[in-house]
Amino acid sequence: MTDLIREQALYINGEWVPGSGADSEVENPATEQIVGVVTQGGRTDVDAAIAAARGAFDPWAQTPVVDRVRALRRLHEVISERAASFAGLITQEQGSPPPVARKLHVDVPLGVIARAAEALEEFPFRSRRGNSVILREPVGVVAAITPWNLPLHQIIVKVVPAIAAGCTVVLKPAALTPLTAFELARAFDAAEIPPGVFNLVTGDGREVGDQLTRSPHVHHVSFTGSTPVGRQVAAAAAETVKGVTLELGGKSASVVLSDVSDELLAKAVKVTVANCFLNGGQTCTALSRLIVPADRLGKVEELAAAAAAKYVPGERLGPLISAGQRKDVQSFLTPDAAAGATVVTGRVSLPEKGYYVQPTVYSGVDPDSRLAQEEIFGPVLSILAAESDEHAIELANNSIYGLGGALWTEAEEDDALSFASRIRTGQVDVNAAPFNPRAPFGGYKQSGIGREMGDYGISDVLEIKAVQL
Image (tube, rainbow, N blue to C red; front, side, top):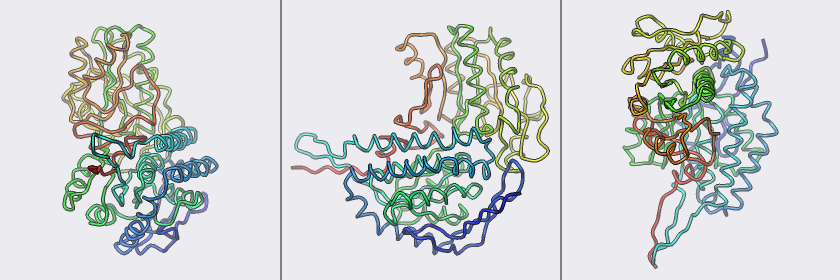
């Protein structure tokens, strides 16, 4: 057992100060061992962090864009130098296998920072419409409330565009994965970001998160988490009529059209399984529904079973975050939950320790069943059969969510765009097109409000002023 990581101070106004709350333990979900002890903040700490952010706002908002760009690039450099340390922390507190911890959890947010710096250099903070000059100005203090599934990435996509825009930030990280946030605070310090621009307060969401959301001195709340909690955040923020960015649940569909070749079909299944099982299935954009032509269902089942068999728990497949999350996912792996669907994957051995579950692929899933409708947040894929391409689009849109999605087709670009435009979701990847950190990220329907990353993340925390001349 390694020595415990002890974080006994919060980062407020550029200084490390003791938290006023009780300590909280951090568990490694892959080993069920305690790996850290973290101080917790309370009401006085939240007040202090908000006051620091308010005090830093005017000077930071007036900092020239070129200097804010330099600050982001210094931050990128510091995190790059410490990438192995960040990845190691994520493996300890989130359970991610080391290769995934580095590639997904560290390298992807580094790309987000780099592209945010580019976006800031080019951003149109001033434009003209007739006799009016349109100014886009930072909203003020932003509260960032982040989840446990992608501890660094989810912080970066909120905090970096906000400070790029000229806002100041108070971060409340997830209680289950706070260690990465402390390391990030050290990176901000090393990058010489001015005191008060970034502040870190840990604590319970019902206390610290709620106080941040309701405070009249916080001007925008950016929250990622479940849809039910997102509704509560939006209601609390409405008391002071502040803006919200909500990145919530998802039940994304991977739609295979009838024109695909055997080669593209194989790629579609392989990529969909990989995406669904990524991070133990704990991503809001997981392609958890695979919609395929009915006449190719048998072949798809074979391909999916073979692809899923490569995800060995404890090796390529990480654990769920907690015993409670494992119990929730296991509720979808019962005969009653299957609702007549067929399991096409075999059972595999699970590690003796850790919150692992069986990676599972169901076929013949009822489109209106729990399997097809609820966000599972685990390595569970549902295959649905479509009678036509029109039916496939209908099935894809049969959800309260609309966050991510994929489309597989041999069609020309214009026709592919036409199909993609009919899927009611914030993102659609056609034939495994690469992730783009300059593109907007966010959802339709009950998947959220607002957009993150790049130009769009900056825009989300700006006010618009018209000056008539």
